[in-house]
Image 1 (spheres, rainbow, N blue to C red):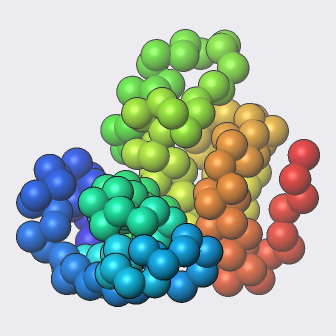
Image 2 (spheres, rainbow, N blue to C red; image 1 turned 180 degrees about the horizontal axis):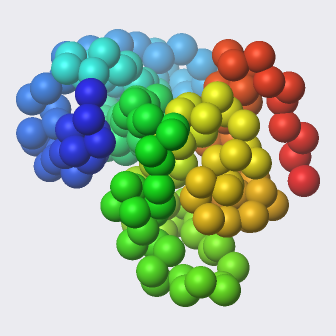
Length: 181
């Protein structure tokens, strides 16, 4: 899998992305009264090319749940799909989303990027790729990315799902979990 492929999947129109998915609808259990128990409003999307699967079952509306599932699938592309990078040749210039974000912030500015920023998920995907390449060692990844360890940890803490991915990655590489700051 390549970074371009991950990006293409994440930026596809809803129609094109759904065409690559197996869509299942089912009855969700839980609160919501009679209507929830009688209609198949929950949605599961299985993206066949990547193997990723997401669900949405919060709403009583199948259309709302389908839209939520599509957003979750796009986020899952960035969170779960890693692009192999050669750690010994890794430079920030090799990461297009990271480089563009760095150019916008300037060399001395703080690293400020939140989940509502459209650059957030592509940048985080590249950061997770770098972490994977360096064995989940945050200080090494920060050095490779040209930021302080504290700045990188702050970015990783900005979304609970990202933080969870980082912790799972660290455990997979035999590293101790990070503590929330």
